[in-house]
Image 1 (cartoon, rainbow, N blue to C red):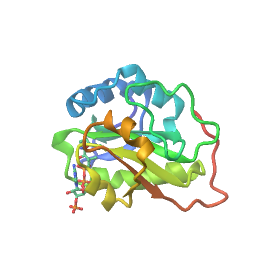
Image 2: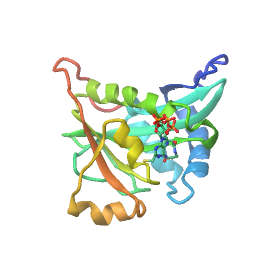
Image 3: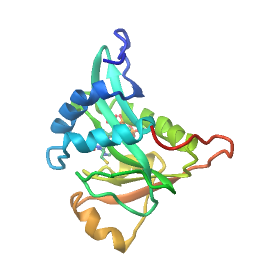
Length: 184
Ligand SMILES: CC(C)(COP(=O)(O)OP(=O)(O)OC[C@H]1O[C@@H](n2cnc3c(N)ncnc32)[C@H](O)[C@@H]1OP(=O)(O)O)[C@@H](O)C(=O)NCCC(=O)NCCS
């Protein structure tokens, strides 16, 4: 397994590797009891955009993960579906999933994730972050600079994410020279 260095007492985010997929799947099964996604669907995101996939590690254990990928602003990918490919003209970095084990929640890891995600978006010249807030986490995301974007055309798709689902976005300022090509 890629290093979750033995000594770090404070959890740190690092890039995810294929060898983390067992841990990612195990965490998803604990955190997303009502929003299950197949392992192959999670695996596809790591294959398509490893730069947007992170794991939270402490003393050799994976305690959480975040999966994000370039996407089209104002649209929501359906849950538990394959993306197939990244859009050729992506207009945002979509945070598909953040899941931290209950014992590791509430210690700042979620907050510390956001600068890493911001950086991944900027590096790929994506000037917005987007996500679907679930489990009534709207205030968490608002504190991280996101705002709800009301769009009636999204209602049906959002409903598949649960009653509290909201589409939220955060604009970013992108430096002109900071781009990297999309894809693995
Ligand atoms: C939501 C989640 C990512 C937040 O990460 P975390 O490490 O627990 O959060 P932090 O410790 O960084 O908390 C940052 C702030 O957000 C608040 N917060 C944490 N979880 C929250 C939640 N579920 N709803 C609202 N606010 C929340 C904290 O109280 C803290 O506020 P403060 O700055 O006033 O003290 C994490 O709890 C988690 O994985 N939850 C289960 C799955 C989930 O809800 N994923 C997100 C779906 S969109």
